[in-house]
Amino acid sequence: MNSLKTTYHHIRRSPFQSLIAILIVTVSFFSISAFLIISQGMSSVLKYVETKPEISLYLNDGLDKEKVESIHQRLKEYPEIREIKFISKEEALNIYKDLNKDNPMLTEMVSASILPASFEVSVNDPKTLDMIFQDFSQESNISDIIYQKDLIENLLVWTKNIRNIGFFIAISLAAISFLVIFVIIGMKITNRKEEIKISRLLGASKFYVKKPFIYEGIFYGLVGSFVGSIIAVIIALNTAPHLNSYFSPIIFISTEFNFYFLIMISQILLGTMIGFLSSFIGVKRYTKF
Amino acid sequence: MKIKFEKVSKNYGSITALKNINFEIGKGEFVFLVGPSGAGKSTIVKILLNQIKPSVGRILIDNVDLSLGKKYEIDAIRVKTGVIFQDFQLISDKTIEENIALNLDIASWPQIQIPAKIEEVLTLTGLKNRRHLFPSQLSGGELQRTALARALSNEPELIIADEPTGNLDIENSWNIIKLLKDVNEKKKTTIIMATHNLDVVNSLKRRIIYLKNGEIQKDTNLKIKKTKQK
Image (cartoon, rainbow over all chains, first blue to last red; front, side, top):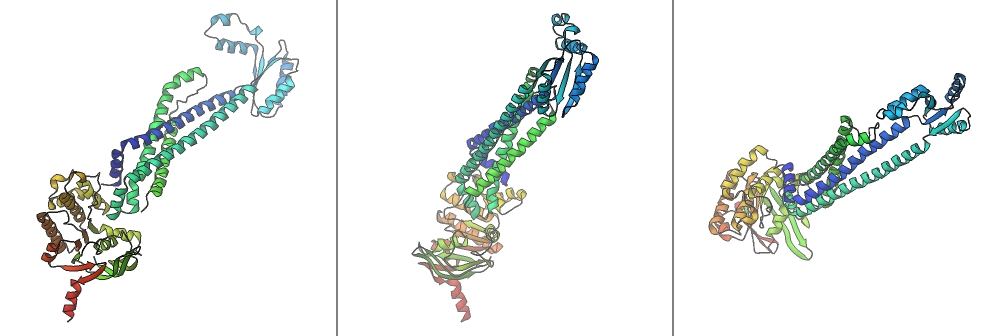
């Protein structure tokens, strides 16, 4: 009878305690995995918005090439400019047609002449956006400025809050898993005091009697984290087509194998570590020889 | 295994359980610890098992001082010792077979040899058909034999038996004594048996240490030695 058999014996003798430990760890790791997947989705949204033209300057009709070029040159002089893209009237019409390709009525009634030409400017530093907005808002050659400052700021705040709350919840759930395994191992040691005492009388070393309990904690952490994260991954992959079409063109739920592989591996490692640490400390705390 | 008690005393508060105990037991000896209740037999057994420490004096087993020895040395001595406890000390939620297997596992027996060894000791003690039962399903005599089977299983160098015939009828008592005698003679296992059973003690004609009120009243070994010296 080796230590693994003894661990199996312990689990079999008090299955409900073991089930509770596994369930709590499963729920914790399901939540942590779900948070990681959602957090990744939020990052995708933010990244998408950040990489889009963040300020659009719509030009008045009838501007000659020199004036357009002069605006272009002025825009180039701002710091932290990532990209300046000129959208002509014809290009604007193409974009419009592409966006409304499913509705021919809308495309038939529109011609290039009624759509304004524009500059789409993306920047590295949001402060530049303010400067462009201030400088060009009174410009007579500019008919309109669309500035996504509020949207980005709100998105940043939301992403940050979700990450902070998620991190707090993840830490709390990991702590709960730790405590549950710690307490259940403690209860099992108390229940098996007689066995420990007899084993010691027969010459078992301290490590010999501790080992099955440590294995038990590792088992709870390993199984709970595996089941919790695999459930989260299965749900994510099943809901991905619906959510991604809703957020299109943003890929809110990743469908990359590597992403889920990393989640699974990191969760299983974390779960095993929690199982090991909680049972190790539990064994130290509850076994007095 | 060689055992040496040097000026050992044990006090429980104001009560003295052992007073200046001195004796030496050589390898392969069979020694009875005899005396009325409260004489100190169980205290000697507990000290030998390192369950309690002496108040004064020292105990050497194979030259390892039980009070000063390192933990792994004490564990190693325990592994080489088979014990038949008065209250059996069997694990209640393990079967007879599992209880014996645990002892063998602790003694680091190769896993592959464990089933055969269990079979051997169960046959020896007549418990073959009880192997899958739990201690609560056995009679007093069967429990005693299970404790004996476990003690014999890892082929110990020392067997300490605390009232091993206490729960047995005459026939079973003699069977157990015969088994212990055989082990002692064939394998040169040192045996220390604490008992009330004077029939057994007198019939076996082995060394006897008489205890009373925590003191050695008589040690037949010393008598023999003194006779030889004269």
